[in-house]
Image (cartoon, rainbow over all chains, first blue to last red; front, side, top):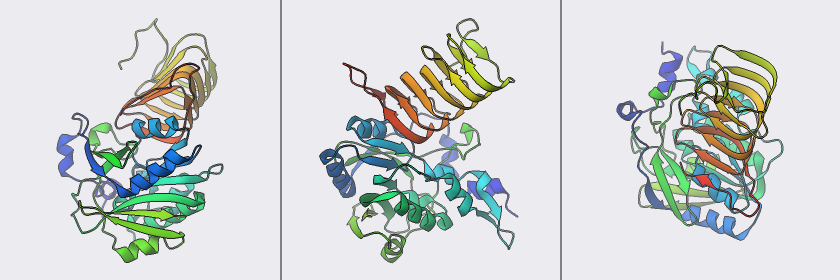
Amino acid sequence: MASVSDNVMKFFRSSSNQTAGHADPQKITRRSSGMAEISRLLNSQESLCVLDLGSTSANNIRLFTGKGHKNYSEDLLRSSLDPALRIKDVDGNSVVDSKKFLDENVVYANAKFDVVLCWNLPDYMEESLVKPTIDRLWSVMKPGGLLLAFFHTRDAGPDSTCYRYHVTDTDLLEMQEAKFAPPGRPASEKQSPRLQRVFNNRHIENLFRDFASIKFFLARDAIREVLVVR
Amino acid sequence: MDAPKTGEFAHIGKSVVIKGEVSGSEDLYVDGSVEGKIELRNHSLTVGPNGNIKADVTAKAVVVQGKLDGSVNASDRVELRKAAVVNGDVTTQRIAIEEGAFLKGKVDIQKETGKAAGLASS
């Protein structure tokens, strides 16, 4: 039977262990049509409420707060890997406790968001958490609010690089390979998360079926950007 | 950042557990556990790599290398080092976040009068 740590570690790429502890990963850039639309909104309105679900980025905080918006940061992928969330199902398999996860995460009694940046979270998060998390995001967004998410268009393999995203003031995104240790584990165990699955268009439409509208942007790097209106 | 030399800071070692309110008029280095409230006003708090704080913090500057659960109100700056884990809202004029740091909460950057607020990149 797999141990809790085995089940957590299957979310990481074994090869990246070799580079743990080295210098910060290099930044690369990509153009994002979805981010261009978000940037237009951020530049045209004041005092928006922005929820960034990617790895904590000083860049993003600087840009959002510098424009007078409120910034909330929550690294959901890393939180979802907390070994304390693992329970046994009726068959004795180790699964993540989605109720506990949602009791502890995306809990905002006093905030409603105009912009939610999901980045590549759905592709790297355990499948049982994806739909409940999207439903929770719907409930904490304002009507008309925008959500941006990235999905792989074909199975790039489990070693497909997981990135953390830094916004600029334009449609250009800076990306760095995301590496972290599961909560409670030492930094020396820092690794890159593994791609869990590839959603097709129908799956994506189902995920966001409660939202008002959905727009797809197909990029050259086999990433499907999805901009959803609450 | 290494642990500061004794004498430069008041020092709470890693075997020390404090429950209650900690206040002072000198810089404080915490490598142990504090549960309650920390109020230093015009001085700095450094949470060492073994530090585990469950408290709302008010200080001039806050540097986190360990774990902090609670709101942080720093009149000058906040630094989250690469192993920092912070669960709580942060209010400050400047914030620096190293790659690898974890922050869950709202960040409120208060603009300095006559100066632009600044952040270091991660």
